[in-house]
Length: 512
Ligand code: GLU
Image: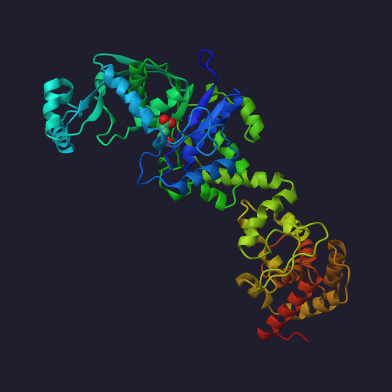
């Protein structure tokens, strides 16, 4: 699997023309794993020759999202390295030099055909029902013919003279042998008339000069590989080994379209997926560890990873499975760490002041945002611990816990209905009175009092505790009632019980 003693050097070469897509990140992950497994180098470089669509902010997004997932690179546009620069637009001289070499050795020729002439050829092929292949008109031009073209003011593209009657053989690390007849390959352009190199040429120059040993990329590139092999051969350069990963499909078996919102890595971060869950999940798209385990740490994945266990079959990106996996990671996480990760979501929702986890020990917590009660980090940890079993993403912490942070709550529809049930207002008035006289706000004493009230009022526990829950949380479902009341604290519980009694009274019920 390792190329004859060459050090392992792999790369990804995204175009910074949009937010990074799961498919690209999956390729990045597999390259990164391969590098880390073999003690090699992982190179990040940008294919930014599409100047209109390439943007620095997309470069930054790629950096951020890779870092967020923990995929660090050894060489790249931001940190440099021995084989830079790492942006194609900064390497144009290099491509020009390699193009001159190929021109000198006769592997490429100037092509003067205009887009209109090529279009006419294409239409003719279509009419005749043939697959289109460039006619090779300019390949046959002699020196005088070329001069005549230049005299017309035409500027040439450079086209590669594909050898006839050969078969390119590729021993793909994932798919096995692929054979490709050169007769199916049209003479292809390597440099446009404006001097811009095309993908297949630039990528080969980059891979040669950056000493890439293994090219691991998506199956969509298979048809480019024979073309690239011809360029290696023409330059007399050793090819890297190639491995093409299978497509990633949605559960509907559609391809994860590049522009689809669900396919962006950043969306998963914004929705509160954990990077370790995403990496674990993505590692299982097309790869299986020897023991078939589903939960693996990054270290374990590196340890077990090998291309031998990567399948060429398409794999399915099932968002529900990712959510299930994420929920598992949340449940297993140490609660303080979980609270720390939930904080940005709570801050953004305006439920807590910023930076509670960075306060020096013993410091007074800052003013809460408007309409919220004051919380310190310990309180956030407590509240989060009550929901740890229930939330599937970090973003869900907001909806799950906001009643702990808001000064006032509105009972939701079901809670309102429960509070308006005949007899409830009266019972809650007694509950309020009893808890007002009670001081110990730990869960057990709160529960003991609750049970005494059940006896006294002659109700079932459920019939009493559900209205109390509706009163103090505004909902009919919450974490265990007395843990919830303890975390809410005495003041909020009493305020809310009083408000619920009032609510029931307004709803027309006698409370006294
Ligand atoms: N920019 C190409 C891509 O992201 C690079 C392909 C390659 O790895 O050769 O698909």
